[in-house]
Length: 286
Ligand SMILES: NC(=O)c1ccc[n+]([C@@H]2O[C@H](COP(=O)([O-])OP(=O)(O)OC[C@H]3O[C@@H](n4cnc5c(N)ncnc54)[C@H](OP(=O)(O)O)[C@@H]3O)[C@@H](O)[C@H]2O)c1
Image (tube, rainbow, N blue to C red; front, side):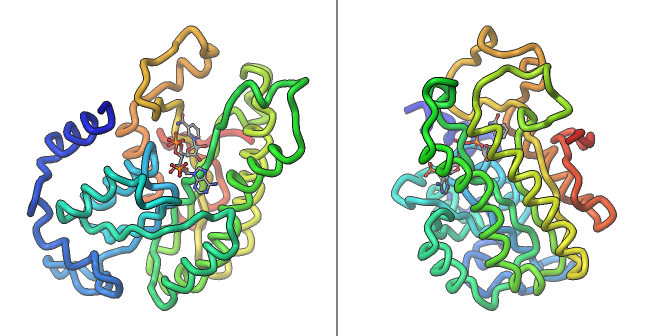
């Protein structure tokens, strides 16, 4: 019910309803995204957002769609992507694709469906913070560590690798991964303890993205590590008592966070590639 309320709130806030996306529906068709915009300002850019059924991923998809971009929104289970489907049904230029990036066959099938389609921007958003109790000393388990590493670090690497032909064919040539400030060595010891898998996997993601930045300079592809701040994406009341002072200070709402990260991506250049940016645009120390 809370989700439905949130969705209705968004639809009202953005004046969306049936037919509220004039001139954009055409971009839902595969291959239509390179058609000139109505204003004749060049081709409609295409963005791929992973983990787009909820939370920050859903906000990325919605905000790029509001701009008129062609959005390829990946989800693990389309049946659980109700809000995204509602937006697409209302005419938003969103194409929903199934992808579990931790499953090689799923990734292969997704990349095959996208073959030949230029992609301007790739947002590797899918990730998990998981459960705190299983990430405490005394509870640790190797297979769980593998799981977090796959979801949070390896999937961004493999998705980016598999979509390189699409990115090379795109005009903007930009890639992002969503990290977390708790993975910063520089932030130590001002962060809370625990969360071993999450922190280690996001630190690994940082290195993956830095490495990609080096490797992809020659292709003209810029790579950014992004931090969204602390965003309550669970629809629950904020539990300020459970947060460190640093977390409380970086708490932000989802629209501010995603709008800020989009601005960072808009301004991303090859010179700024391989850096870690907060949603405010500030550079974060590793
Ligand atoms: N919210 C924050 O404060 C915060 C702070 C720092 C970094 N981040 C990062 O920002 C990203 C989005 O965060 P969020 O708060 O929006 O998270 P969320 O609400 O938990 O959503 C996570 C998304 O990732 C997908 N996902 C999870 N495991 C996956 C897997 N194995 N394969 C493919 N997709 C998977 C989820 O799909 P399902 O619905 O199918 O599970 C969902 O779409 C994550 O990478 C997160 O670590 C968030």
